Length: 134
Image (cartoon, one colour):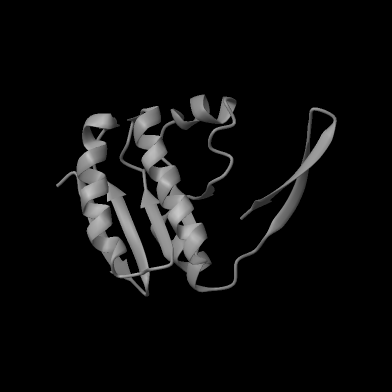
């Protein structure tokens, strides 16, 4: 299967089991995701550890899931891929909205237990912006 969905402790864990996640796979991803969103879960984990490449369209699907989680009052974690393809998006500052973890177990622990929050400031166009990172 290209995607695996499992529910653990009121968390929806989505594993992306494909090397290249592109707009071709987004429709199947959204269809399966919409089925699981009817369960009104608040917290999500997206495991990208198997992926080698993600295009901007598939990334927009993950950002949409983050929006759904935020509207519901929940949270979302991303399991980082093993390679550094994600640095391309971080240079564009497109992925700084996500909270990252290195394993499913750590992400489950952080979402179930207390989240540690650190604040930092970044100067952007002579104004300071605050970000929350875990």
